[in-house]
Image (cartoon, rainbow, N blue to C red; front, top):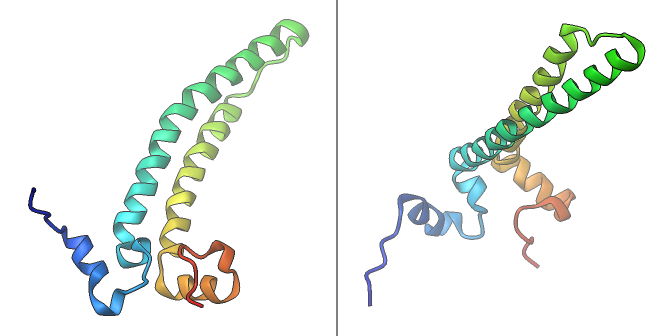
Length: 118
């Protein structure tokens, strides 16, 4: 059979002091990077959809009431989506802090990344 090669991350996790440590705590940078990449992909998909919806609303308002959507509304919608992406990465980083993980495990086990030991 093929030879199994352990990555650096796998070696970090299997060291004795990391037994039972969730991967996002053992490798916080990787966890944050993965979440940020996923959020950016979501942002790339959400921005055109949000702008399409906003343009339809603007067209409808102008047609029905002769009101125009102010330029700041477009900035606010796009800025809100970008802000959500940034905050998602920030929250992921905070959740990867070992002290936060320990607190979640002790006080909110339903949000802990792994099931607490009995």
